[in-house]
Image 1 (spheres, rainbow, N blue to C red):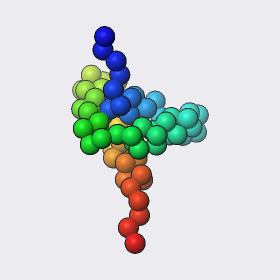
Image 2 (image 1 turned 120 degrees about the horizontal axis):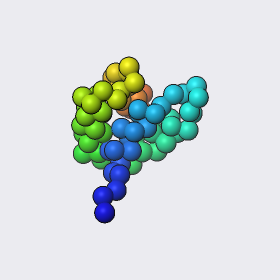
Image 3 (image 1 turned 180 degrees about the horizontal axis):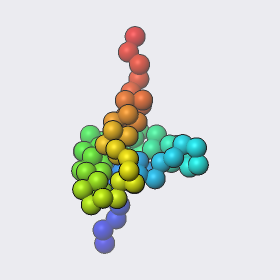
Length: 78
């Protein structure tokens, strides 16, 4: 039976995320990103591309949202 993968969950959280009305999505994204392998991030990118291709991006640039989130998760360099 197919189940959602970490990459798919990241993509769906990026789609649903609204820090003002859905703060739990950011909390979930942080936990998912911490557990994600590079392949999971690539799968999230592919899923977001498909969501956008099918017109379900809700007027947002989901790929940019993902990249911005990932940049914010990287530790600052000294």
